[in-house]
Image (cartoon, rainbow, N blue to C red; front, side, top):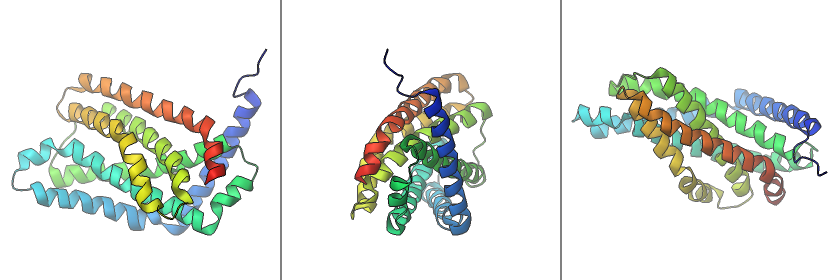
Amino acid sequence: MTEPLVTPSRSGTMLRDAALVLGKDLRLELRSRVIINQVLPFAVLVLVLFAFALDPDRRILTQATPGLFWLAVLFSTLLALQRSFGVEAADGVTDALRLSGLDPAGIFLGKAAGIAVHLLALEVVLGLGVTLFYGATPHGPVLLVATCVAATAGLAAVGTLYGVLSAGMRVRDTLLPLLMLPVVAPVLIAATQAFAAAYDKTSGEGWRWFGLLAVFGLLYLAIGIFAFEPLLEES
């Protein structure tokens, strides 16, 4: 009989290593405060600029709230990924992870979880921002929360894969958006549609889009678990 790709013992090691990497990334953020000092102000500024651009017609601004919210999240994700992987590549952290003996799948899950935690905190602030700046009130809180979790998982998984792929390249600042944006287009579309349903009191229609987000996130998490090792070796 052939052994399963992920054995119980490897699963335990993978989760343990993921927790170590997650703790490292969270401690690094507490010291550097990149999300608080750079990414969060950028995201809020994007929302304010959108409000100024569409303010003459508040009706359009309210209708565009879901799309503007997720555009702000996507732009902020790119900035956070570029900063995170750029710093690690410059400081030799990527090389240290490669030589650490940690399970590559665990490294992937830990880094994806760290990015997801940062994004979820950012989304809470942006959610308050669109309510304040745009006057949009959600009517389906359960759908909103589920959409944020599923979309964030997809963004974090894709961002980790392409972030490490472009980390060692000189053109990573321009390469990462070119690689990532076409791939996460389904996330942007599905999350916007799900949010629109929640804001329009038609949450039932939004759950179908949530299903697409969940499938996308699970697919890229699976790809990352099995494909991260060669990507890490090439970075």
